[in-house]
Length: 403
Ligand SMILES: [Zn+2]
Ligand SMILES: [Zn+2]
Image (cartoon, rainbow, N blue to C red; front, side):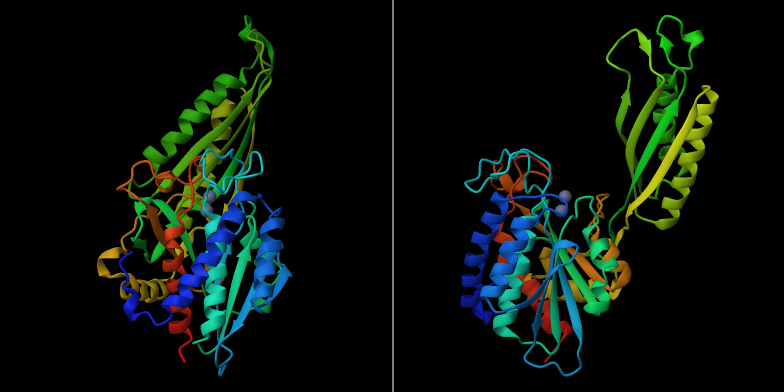
């Protein structure tokens, strides 16, 4: 990235920290764990914080940790927070990296190893410089990938015990080149919900459908009808995705009409009114389509993650900082929202803040592992963005809590 070191007063300190946390990143990558089982990461983070003399509290949502750094002054007791997620995915790694996963079937394919390391680096950098007036908390959060670790930490009283005024986070983004930073006000990640459908008919001989009530045909109609909900019922300018991702029926025998079909899927929306509309209409379509085919339907709509909605003022504040650090041309304020889910949205519902995207692709090298999409078995986190994010987080702390 295009950041001349000459006007950055802590260049050497930052370089040393980056080298140290890169080693942590590779260890974390080698030892991935999913959904509240991030024991290795939790131990490593605690050990580093201990070594650097940084106050911290373990046990948040199990493996989570909150680190606390007080500035040179603490005149008003003001606090801000930074969050980094800790969990990996159930994927068998194919990156071929020297630090590839040592745990079969588990992999840091979303770069949360990088997020933890950048937060660790920020912790050390802020603890050594302390050029802010107030308190910075670093939230190391487990179980982002579907486990709702952010929600669990909030339910355990995170913001009562650590009453931050603002909260910030980043995600690496292999879909745009390294150097570009996406910071936009409003929605950046979607409401992410789960749907569960069970259609019941009457099983029997496949050659005698008139003696049965075939739930497979009903399921086929349900799958097609729910797609028309987005294409025909919703304003084309309202973003929504409905994906039926699992369909289970039958025993393997080709001559039996099964008695029931189970389906699962996900719904993504950016707007709560669209979310409510889809939840209601889905139920109607599923029940009436099932009924039209003589079946009964069970339907559950599970609201999983809130949309991640950046607060306008905080997004502007972060974009101004990023512009100063990296240059005007590197900042994308019209970055299109992703329909991916992110439990940081729950934190932004409680506190103002901003979630930024840091590009990590290396387009001049088409074979680079940093160009593979998130959750891809060949993906790897790009260590080259570590210093940029440490500088970005540190600058937020300095500006939000000025001396
Ligand atoms: Zn992910
Ligand atoms: Zn992620």
